[in-house]
Amino acid sequence: MTNKKKDFRKWALAYVKKAMVDYNMISRGDGVAVGLSGGKDSGVLLYALWAVRRIAPIDFDIQAIFLDLGFGMDVEPLRHYCRRLEIPFHLLRTDIGEIVFDVRNEKNPCALCANLRRGALNGLALELGCRKVALGHHLDDVVETFFMSLFYNGQFRTFEPNTYLDRRDMHMIRPLVYLEQETVRELSVLEKVPVIENPCPVSGHTKREEIKLLVRELMIKYPDLRQRMLTALHTADLKNLWPPPADRPGTRD
Image: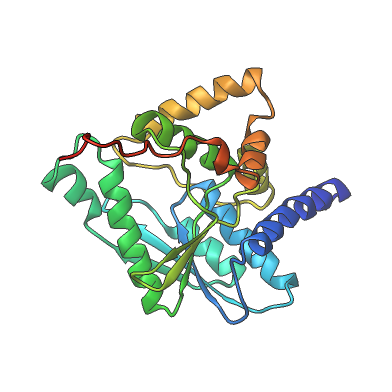
């Protein structure tokens, strides 16, 4: 392996470790379930946690989970990948696809699908003794989620690197949040991460895809947009945002 590839891997993993430390994602003895989707992002996440565990001063357990939504995906490449990393692979068959597209016939299916997948993933994670669930969201996802919340919900918000789910007493962590999409893509090629085509009927035709295109256009004019967003999240000053309107006498019954 060339020194250039080694340096790139070391550089990328340093940002993963920094995110994990900055947001206290993993402690000694933790059980961490990685939600595999068949995409490059979750595949790189699995590799990154495996690589960090090899050099980290703490030991933690890693389990890989793939949710079969009923679309007939071939998971053998993922099973082989997990075997190569010596990480246990768990396949959970569900009827989520049928519920979303046939039973409910949702016009905007992504929200319902995400909720059902999250519930199934977290449930199996707990059964496996994992109170940390790792997802493969990267910096581009952070930016896109911010704009989606702004345009579609009228809110300044995006997901957190480490979210505590009090109803289940577990954490949802995102160790790739400091990495840009291009870095994740390069790592996926370098580490020969298997990628399975997404068979979802609405793949490529969602609101998120619209935002992806918008962010891509903004990046042409403002190439440092993602890093500026990261800086803004780290230094957010809520005092400079409007407070809620004050109640005035006679405005409420």
